[in-house]
Length: 120
Image (cartoon, rainbow, N blue to C red):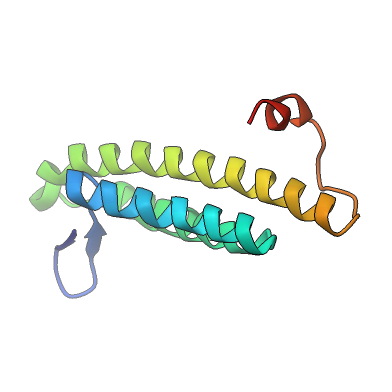
């Protein structure tokens, strides 16, 4: 959901439950597609998107005028959800990178989570 606050100020509000489910489905689809085709850059799209939304919303949070002070709670909730998306995307990226490295006999970026991948 996008909330307009003027000509150039728009907030990407991620507090609506339906929006949250759609975004989670998209992020899981990025991870599953990346796993199927064994390309680790596909989940990276989710990380970059979440980081851009996080930076944009934090800029809006710090430049919020008194007129729109009531949106501060929604912005903070959106930022918390966005941090969760960044963590989910990063773990998904590491997982798909490990799968890609094994399939192409390449060295993985980081093998520190081998204990976790073996349990999946």
